[in-house]
Image 1 (tube, helix red, strand yellow):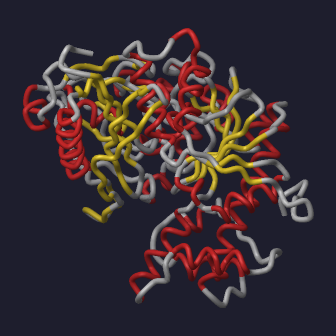
Image 2 (cartoon, one colour):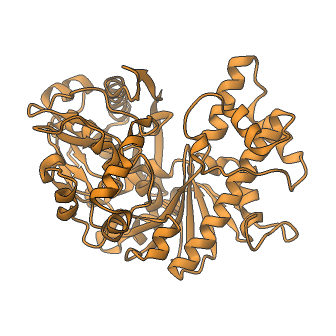
Length: 482
């Protein structure tokens, strides 16, 4: 913090469908978040593949940081640092000069289908899981790297690291996102050198690792000029995998909680101190991803609101769409016990034609509200299955479920989850990811007591969070999801 005013922090939070730049400040009443810029995001078909337009995203980040600088200055405040979080697994390839070779592929592109068998021939699934603890997903970074024609002389920068590089000129790999690559040792938190050897990958294909709270670097002069931020403004590594930041800000008071980070995807699990690398855990397709302060996010990546988002997009293209609140109200009025689908199925991974695919899988869904109810019933059923497995495999008792992110605003989904699991649900905060991002920056700046660890961050998160509690309806609560 300098003498020009109170320090505030800029959180760049980009998901698969939208992005935000949020200004965070710590007040006597707790953290406050102000959104200063919103922008759309989405995959684009370029050169016959699904890709991310990171050039456009970076331009929006600059606009957002300029707005953050102006907003802070108008209140006599100073933006002290910037933290960046995005989705996981995807990356951009840069050459020796730091130039991007091509726009990054999206995990939704089908190019990895031809690489999976070759990767498993060199490093069998059992070996991969025993070292990395990573859930098998066909788009994990390790399979994407195998699809590259050549990696000679280039480095792979995960999306938040790529944006940080463009801001600072410094190349680093933040640890929580690195844990989604399929190449990080789950027990040590370092790169698994033997896997790099087995897969004929150079160890330096990724830049050095850093932990959340590490200063990556100061803004490049042209970035400082374009944003109006002070030249000494730093970029701080946060939980750059958005779920890591979201889980850090779960307003829990004890350890007996489960979390559902509900957005385009649903990340469903519990927080542990050490990974679970057993064959049983692998068979259940659970992942051990790193969280802030070396915690383990023991979770399964399950279906999410992508299904609903795609249906709404398609219906909107067909004509005037009823408001979402009305559609959800009509869905809530439908009787329980309707059809469910496997929302985790790869059949629902790609865009376009989502309502037809859901109807094909579920059977008779005569109305839009029936499709919506099917989606939400299916998500809740999947959550219940996953949490039952998480409790069994980890030995962790679950006393409360915290739903954070966009899905926490969906009261029907929250109630269905409580009913399916028989466990109370606490919903909120909506902006958990940005809140965790800001609080890690604030702790790095010495504004939270570092010795309190995640408990200190969560104490601050509770002061900021607006939450709703959903009790399971006894007659509807199920001991198993079905």
